[in-house]
Image (cartoon, rainbow, N blue to C red; front, side, top):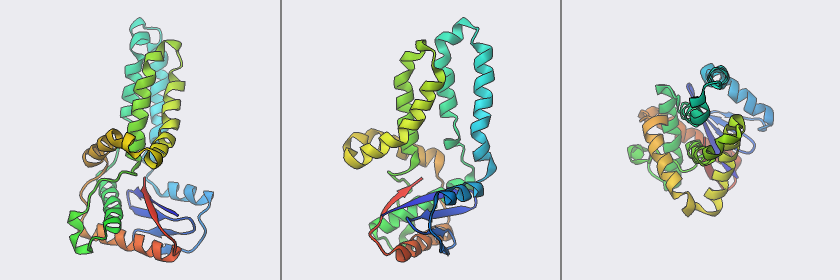
Length: 226
């Protein structure tokens, strides 16, 4: 049984197979369905949802305008790389970073069985964070860039994005030692870009929510963060 964490600008959701615990410790007593994910997505700040169309709005016009330029045909990979590196995954406002940090620390406290009073000792990095998938996607993107002469800019970006999460999960489960470099890079990016030190209340509420969910699920738990 997996429990996933989903941070947003107003809090954290811990999601189990059958129930969801909110950051305030309450538990939504209803089955988790596909529709539940859409409900959760609607609670996330609109800027995250709008970031993808904004990127597309930038990518296509500039690509069309620059496509006629000889230099762009040779350097379009830089355009693709900049779009990827500026993707919404690293556009985290301060409050979301703090909740994301609290989410990671709650998993660490639970995994290492730390006392809540020792929350400052909890690692803010998490090997299961989606940042690892973003880093994997970057490796895939860079690996595919030498083939840019075949003129499938969109296919390259799409393939990198879609394969990243799947490949990361397979490596994490079966060949964790091969994911060491990505895990280290992901950890550094988490510290620098996607998390910030939360306050004691944030961590306390996150731990209580996670424990509440585990208690209601009543099954062995492994954890994953997004």
